Length: 305
Image (tube, rainbow, N blue to C red; front, side):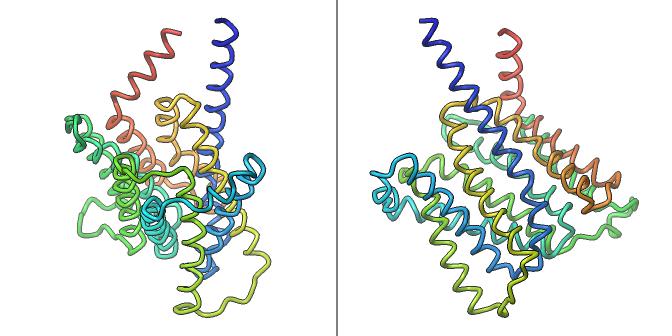
């Protein structure tokens, strides 16, 4: 019994480490995008989806070569949902960075945990609670703080297209995450296969609508690394969700805006302003309040250990 318990704890530790690693990778995504932003959007999307998908295929090939062909042929309906959901989210996410300061669009995008909590309240056996509404309002206040620019006059506040795209990206990911939880067509291999389909789709859009891009060897590596991080991040998160402490990792993921901004500032991309700092804090605090029940549960569990 003791050996079994020890093995269970080791598996959970491995799962938790995988989850933390995924969060760190996702925190780096805005930083690597800043190095690859001169690349045409559809081509950048195609590149990241391609290498993200290839990473998955390589992992499958190493772990279970006998099932590789089967994994590459999931049911069509299971592929369609992530194909649209993840594809649309990334189109909005990448374009938000093109049309607004990266650090600001990045913070707004991280409202998606709040949207997941908010929309999940409308699922069967759930109900909308006051603290969820209050947390969402604090997150919206964070967006206002981001753009207040020292002006108390509301008419003086300025929002760019990228800010709205980042908000729509967060909204899209919130809706997708809740719907995929209730979907009857889930398949473990659907996401990586949808990556490869999206890579082909966005490559076609690049040739149809964007100017040809002369390879810039100072930019291409960042795009490749970005794609690899996406693939590894999804793979490690899958391990985390199957072995780790889901509640604890969920709470840790709410801190991603802070770690992402910290990385951007550390590598000299934006100048840290009070507006930027307080906006990130508002969104993190708002998300923690909205997920109060989960935070309390995690705290009590580890307090009693």
